[in-house]
Length: 352
Image 1 (cartoon, rainbow, N blue to C red):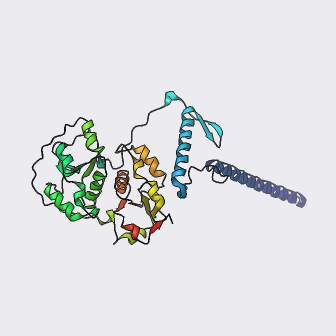
Image 2: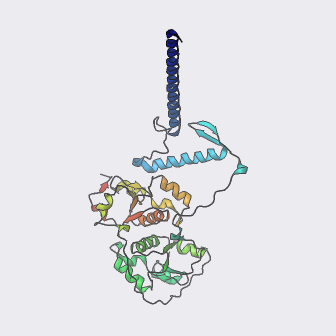
Image 3: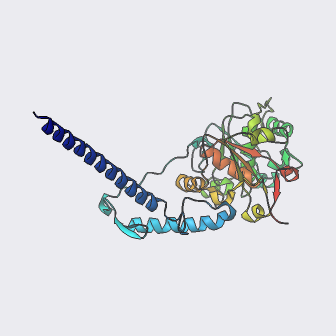
């Protein structure tokens, strides 16, 4: 092979390498282009003023939620009709055949033992009726014992010593499986939180309270059962309550999330730090019965809650309901009891 031919061959190899490199660059640029196009579709609304379903507006959270719910309803309607759209462009749904539709099974709550249906067996459970003594005597679930929930409060906050005395008088033992029965108020939710704080391990809430029991066919009785006083002992779980002594420690947690359970009007007037997330407790319940798993998952996911973190709820008495819902759904919830926080440096007044 001559020198000139060898040079020509090297030139051809170099040109081929340069061409391959150029094609690689084109391929990379095309990939970037289509990736940007895809992200533009997935995140539509973040850059052109349109509604963004994944960008909560904490300054006007209720307004954003209203738009988000309308957006989700439209997406559900589109999916059911096969008219799925991305950025207003119809997309054919794969396998959209009603004959192949399988109804999803009802999911159970992550911590199901915290909730008992009115129609479920109550065998082996000690029932605590936390309504007023008058309501209790007018008719209660057979065998239930009465501990009025407001009787274990001092200045509107849980008094552990009063709670232990009441449990002893009612003959409750530390090993008992307790079923809490209340009425259409916050008493049952408060009592469940209080028992968890006292360290009682086996506790459940009667879903829907006394009314649900009557609707399920339970015949109320007026007979007051005789009980032997117990030696009930509290085993306090300190982290289930936020008070003046440990508030600073909770706020220093890197994974803390602060939830306001009050009505949005109250949240608009004042809040506990400007990092609070509004989570009106009533949204989690319907006619005093907690909503299903799917509905709770939607409501809680809208707040981007982290199950690996800690959720501090405040705004009693509504906070007791929120605490229960979070625990039922497997979150690490704790509770700030009372309104003393309004006198601390972390209280933010939104109305001047």
